Image (cartoon, rainbow, N blue to C red; front, top):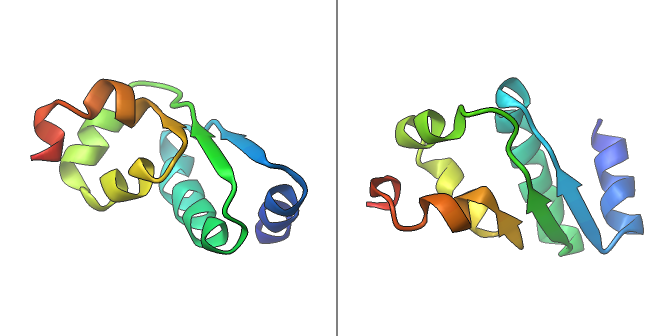
Length: 84
């Protein structure tokens, strides 16, 4: 998986990520680490309705999602109580 992410970010200017609830924590962390090196545009499309509950419990993901070019977080959650 690490090799694929590295190759994907190296070869493309824009990467669309579609993580489901179980993969979100792993995928977001890996892309966050690799994107510090490659500095590509990331688009996050959330599958399912798990994100509000996850962000309430683990606020560290809010900071990571803010780095994405487009994220459901920026449009739906930016003005909610999750950021406070």
